[in-house]
Image 1: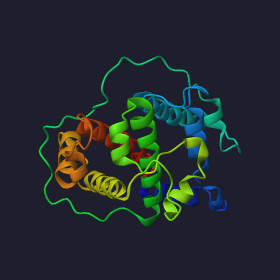
Image 2 (image 1 turned 60 degrees about the horizontal axis):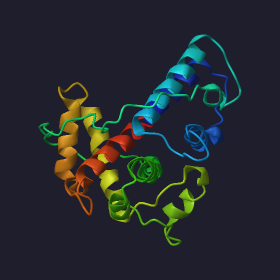
Image 3 (image 1 turned 45 degrees about the vertical axis):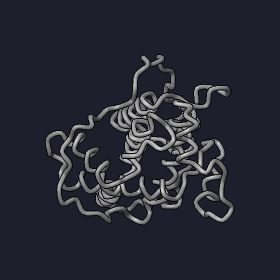
Length: 242
């Protein structure tokens, strides 16, 4: 969000006469991208590493487009022209961080902005669906993390059902609280310890230390690994928004 505010400030300074159409800042483009990365009608998901590679490819494509001085009024241009073909990855666990890090001390909480909360539960529900349900196909973890059906009395569930193409799961309240806390820790660490050595290992260490969900296996023998990998999946997506 700070990066977005900085960008808006730079645009207004450089182009004092322009009007920024705030109504166009919505999640529709993000939803469109998630729909585009679906390999086919029969296979509705990709492995997490491929999704992350496509996100990087999209960012690089857009930067190249702007860098060459081209302009367009089509908000979906970069998404529509992106090459979504990928080679099948080697079978391996998605574990970019080790578990032997030393936790940070004195990491404050409460840095999540109010308007970021919706993104966290949206990404969490999408992550549960894509990584736990579609990639791992782990019913034990799925039942631990998800209510499986939308709660008509839960506003978050009602809103997310509008994103029908995402085919999301509906995370339990305690699971959302865990992911909210993890994102809060992540954002704080980035703000205060960006240059620290072994930041990835230490970040994961303090998250596991503070958030009980990521220390418990639940009904699955590999539950800790699955939930930790899911956390990294969601954190990568969340990092694009802050």
